[in-house]
Amino acid sequence: MKPSIYGLEKAELIAWFEANGEKKFRATQVWEWLYEKRVMTFAEMTNLSKALIAKLEENFEICPLNQIVVQESSDGTVKYLFELPDKHMIETVLMRQDYGMSVCVTTQVGCNIGCTFCASGLLKKQRDLTAGEIMAQIMLVQHYFDERDLGERVSHIVVMGIGEPFDNYDNVTKFLRIVNDPKGMAIGARHITVSTSGIVPKIKEFADNGLQVNLAISLHAPNDELRTSIMRINRSFPLAKLMDAVDFYLEKTNRRITFEYIMLAGVNDRVHHAQELANLLKDKKKLAYVNLIPYNPVSEHDQYSRSSKDDVLRFYDTLKKNGVNCVIRKEHGTDIDAACGQLRSKQMKKRS
Ligand code: SAH
Ligand code: SF4
Image (tube, rainbow, N blue to C red; front, side, top):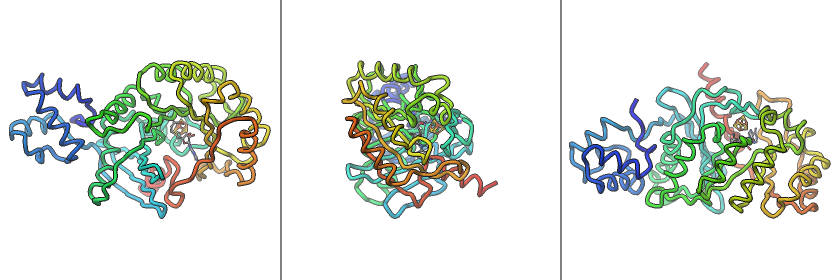
């Protein structure tokens, strides 16, 4: 299988050209075709010689993904189901926000973390995505705009699709460098958020990697007992260790951190949970932001239901009263299997 050229950083592309007896400026031309003119075949790169086009075709493919389903929601959310070269399926979601066009990308086929409320974890990890396969998701959404002449640009990225990004750290950080390249897609680091279930050593590594990308932590519970019961990973990295890594991150970067908290009726949404959460975050108040997320029902996890509006508001008020920054997340695409992993899991059922 040929690697996708989307998986190369610019410096790597240049190095490949030099190693193959080609001029450096040719690599820059190819980079422009990929990310400015955004062609999908090497043959369209008309300022390259036929021989060079043939050489590129022999060594790389451009887009490794095949589009299977596109669902458009009444609120403008678009959900894509893509097939990988080895026939695995992944999902990507485009959300139209007031501040821009935000794309949610998948980083693994399945997920080994197995959180009890999540559709993605229903499938054990089959494999990691390559940097090129993650980048291709962004490019296909951008092509969706280009084909419709909408003049729109992918402006924000959330790494919150299927998979645990820090269980595929090297490919994910490579992708971040490619998509952030100022001469490429040029998506600003501050417009990118990576969400992790809490892999402690990687949070520390991420703090040190020099990228100015935002970090979100899937917290979902304010104490170890509850968190372990809904997120198995809390056994390996309990709250004390997680908060240690968070403190390290805050000290190193001085950037704000988001804590995601899914509101599960009767499970973690009581006022005393909010108080406990405020306590947990009390020494980080200025830099900690809590994102209260409405639960997206997953049919395989019918032990959970979403919290009532009143309970969400009470929870929110308790956090606010205790000085914790907090927002209630707006929902997108609820009419089109919005939760990550849902479209994929439905499609697989249809096929089997
Ligand atoms: N594995 C990473 C990133 C992907 S999940 C992580 O867990 O952070 C992205 C976010 O979606 C996480 O906060 C996750 O907890 C949340 N999520 C998973 N299933 C959900 C559901 N059914 N409803 C709402 N949010 C969900
Ligand atoms: Fe994996 Fe994140 Fe889903 Fe947990 S919430 S199973 S870590 S994708």
